[in-house]
Length: 395
Image 1: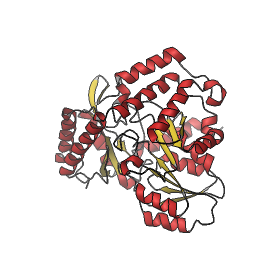
Image 2 (image 1 turned 180 degrees about the vertical axis):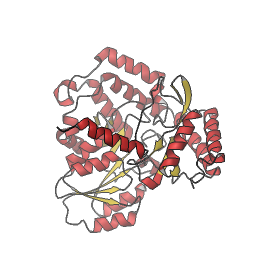
Image 3 (image 1 turned 120 degrees about the vertical axis):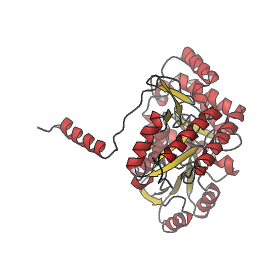
Image 4 (image 1 turned 60 degrees about the vertical axis):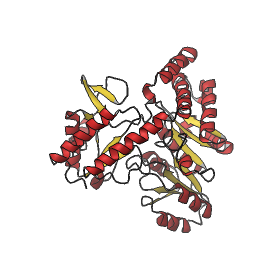
């Protein structure tokens, strides 16, 4: 008789031996600059709540009002009876925010990428991705019937070489993260726009970690570089800097109409709850209205990054609020994460399969609501790890 549990148990034990077994911490507080775990307060250095909007009182109040007016759930997919008026308000707001004709909201960012890529790409097409693109992009590409080509991280010469050999494909789609989620660096978007134009390719940018953060008004990577045309598809999330849940695609009206009719992850998913829609509307409004949180976020990130470099840590190519600390090997990563936790810093280690084995790291991310005291406490802790030679080989 086939014993599934026994087979799974053996594989789980192997993961534990390799240091790859994952466990979750139980958080008993709101997501702020600090969190409560096991009745202890920790400085939170692993959250994507970049602007602090997940605990913003106006956002919370908007969600309460949305639930009271429209109920707890949407009860159906958008194309059946789940298309509440809040959805259309939110999609108009996103399009205005991103400077596009239209937008469409998905239940998650993962579903936005997978659904859009599968809707647009089919047999006879080629998808060309940066090696460090998010897993949802790679999964979407693999699920499609298109050919997948991957170029080394930000290697534009290799990208051009691939495009030169792709003349026979019906449609060429270049896909890149705007801000790379594990390294914290920014895609060379001006050059990518020029390459896409030269080779008659579609350009899609995943702005999950850039929306609300990059650009004077937080519109993302395009605004950061002053690009108004050339990016055909802008993906973003409501679940990071905007503190809520969901993903979206922004672009031309024809693009959005096509996705609405072709993206399976949109068609066959229950619509988001009204509270989430109302909260997201308020979060975008706040992100547009106030530049202070964004300025504070950049100040916090710069202070932390400079301090880490001063201690001799390798922060890779970080240019943003995402600041990795290279640990290289698995044992150092697990040990460092454990000691950080013991000292009141919540910053889990990043291990395979998220990144390659020789690129293990502690991934830290800053929040606008971190105070100088929080950052100084974190820096002091990393200084101690360096002194005790826990991460002495990080360079």
